[in-house]
Image (tube, rainbow, N blue to C red; front, side):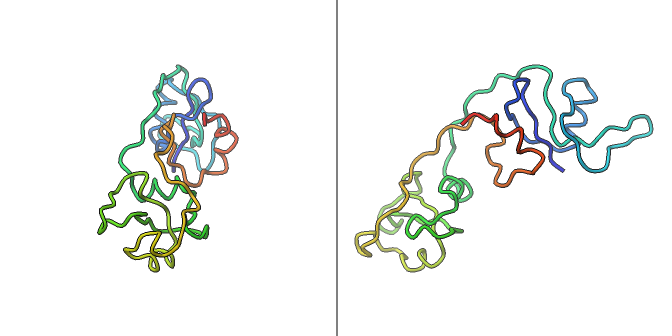
Length: 165
């Protein structure tokens, strides 16, 4: 079970295990805003299972620069949409094939559906007469650690609207 951690200003900060969240609450560093599931019990304490907690003190965060490109981040950046045909994508393709000197950079990797990936092979876009529907590039810096949420839990959604773009 995962718990959304909010900064003292209600901005999403990170996602932690329910156990870590319970420890933060028990140590007086956070309060439970939303709970769900069976409570956490011990011989001396019964605590609601936290789904969302808020820290009592504000934690200063810096914007995180994206690291090297990965399949997961490329698919998220392109919203899991094929850069060639705009259908749902599950793979990543090199716009300029590696066999022709293309590297694994943010600007050369795009999300791609299986059929387009097979048809493209190691050909260039000019050889196929294709053009990109999505312009690849480096993603914007993410201000919080939970930026890799692909499908947020329903109980988190009211709190995620405070996330900085």
